[in-house]
Image 1: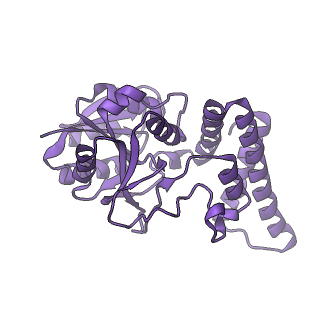
Image 2 (image 1 turned 90 degrees about the vertical axis):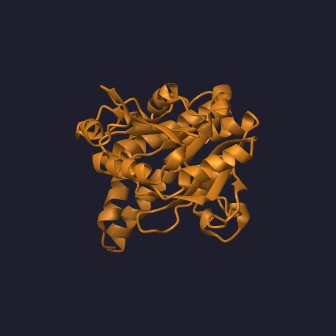
Length: 313
């Protein structure tokens, strides 16, 4: 039975998108009812490629970049399947991954949202299970306490989760690069919050699923490869600022003005410390500055500028 509607939001990620759609063709099996691509105003002929090479795909073309949440909501509105697979354009599915996720939802009626094991381009595991943000775990990450081998300081990382273990495991947050949601659950809790242009919508949605009484489950039997940067690589500093903006929105929504102010302060400490530490290393110790370090300095500077002045790139 064709139960799954696949939804892909893409912005200027033509080659990644082509690989993603090819993987769905090869591994989707008999359970895929439809594939919907929402093109967010791409200028790299992504939409034309979809029309020419994947005529079976439903293409929604926007004249502007709607953002991740709004783009996916558009796809959800068009979808007709019982299960909604939201997949990033820079993800390639492994055989059977969609069927494995759908099987979990079919067997476990208390589960509202599932996601697979995710590998990077190098074949190494990309941990996708996290805790919901709190002042404590964010502080641990900013002070690098999460590098210590003590569970209390592990930050948002869920060290208790065995990412490569065979069994399904309930978690707090699943990374939004590849989800499958139960339509009836989405109808009750609502779609993605469109106040989040890009980033943090995954944390918000997982929190809302759990608050609505639905379980969020990691399914390591299902596997996908996430190359990363399919869209964000087109404007990395802008997306770094969008990450800050999204997190501030999340903290205000779920923790009020005081929570937002705390996160704002911690963000300034985080970027200022990293900018100063790298600068001191170069100026006083004569450390060679790699391309990666130079970019991280530039990123911290841009984020500090936005936090303190509100000015973007």
